[in-house]
Length: 260
Image 1: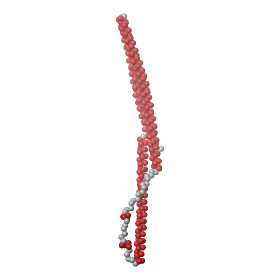
Image 2: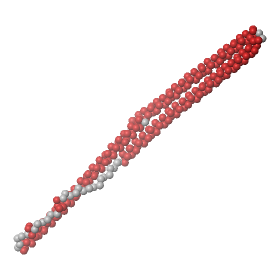
Image 3: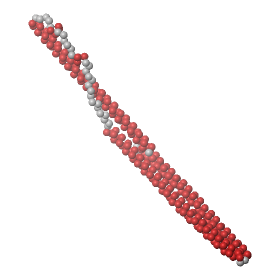
Image 4: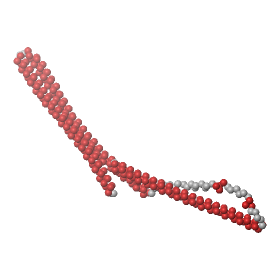
């Protein structure tokens, strides 16, 4: 992605340079055209002025010849005031020309489009690598959750069995205790014997319950350890995928630097 951003920035900067050069060339062409038009207008004005001067000079010479023929000394134009027009003192307006439109050479446009196409291709490849990495992480994470759910279900089953056995033991103990209480009237020795039996049975069942609870706790610890292991594996897989993406981008950059 960093490489594609760099290529895009370089391409856009290069195109801006081309546009600026085209605008400058158009302005220079406009200036040259305006100067040529002004020069042509100047030559036209000079020609018109010289033609007007020649015309006036011809008229004066014609008048002098006419006076000489009639033996007159005075010339009318010498004593008659000539009124000059106001346009004589006005500087001609600078001719206006249409600005030349900037023209960008087709090969510059083609190179710019090619650079943008390269940017699109590199970004598409980066998106594909990212999608693969995210999919790998999601798969590992989902597997981790599934395994943890299974382990939790097994631990819950073990705890339920332990609770049921504990309830059964308590019920049996209560039953034996009640039975023993009813038989206390028979003989004191029988009573003590039944109490001892009930106590022994209770301790035995409590030992079984403790054993089952210990087993269930161990299973839960195993499940948590396995879950942590799977989570670490999923993170390692994600890092590996990201490393592969970076490696591919470096290889792509190296290939492009060689001009392939």
